[in-house]
Image (tube, rainbow, N blue to C red; front, side):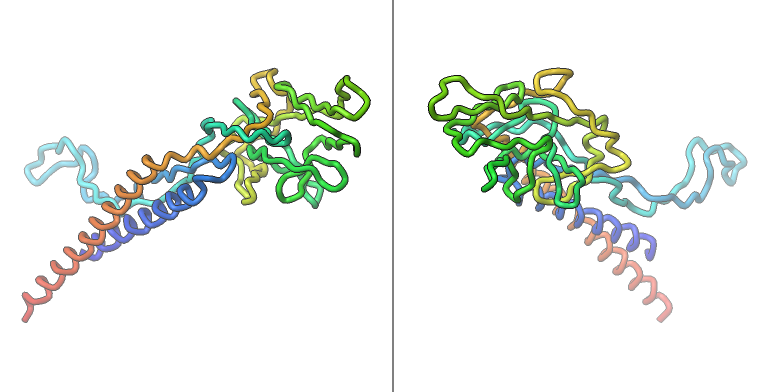
Length: 262
């Protein structure tokens, strides 16, 4: 019965983490460029009461083993980089990636981070930056007299200035992709950084070499499906509840066994 309690407790802990993950997905349903995560589990070790092919009491080889498991444990939160829907904003510095790739931004310590959040702003110096002030990499600076910003599907950035009908090129947006994007480490602020599992970044121009295209005046919304998450939440809640009942049943059985000695 003690083993049953430990096993059921591991199931309760696993489902609690599952609910924590679902809650984070639901909390970010309106977060620009957010990618939902899926909790994955594995069974724990087993106590082998009788090995496969072991002889029974009659000397006949048993066709199956007797193994008692010790529960479940979470092993990963798989980030799902499926394309989110796009939302029209009409803002010239709102950019959505339609397809594969990440925007690359420069962090204050000189390192680089990666994001799908294209809600860019223009700083006081004319640089295109994230909502937290991190500039795009490579850096793109707009002239002081910029009247209109134009971003092509290929990431080419140009501006219109007073007295000149021809757009002036001011930079090129590059995208970055990874062999295993799910291996990136989430840092908050809609940013990801490299990890040993992600592979090295591969830079390229939008619309080429398998990279997605840039859509100006649009934002990619979260790929969280509320109905799907609610179903997952109910399933996790029921699993948590039934594991708690297994603990209660084990406790009642231990009480019966203790009462036999009285």
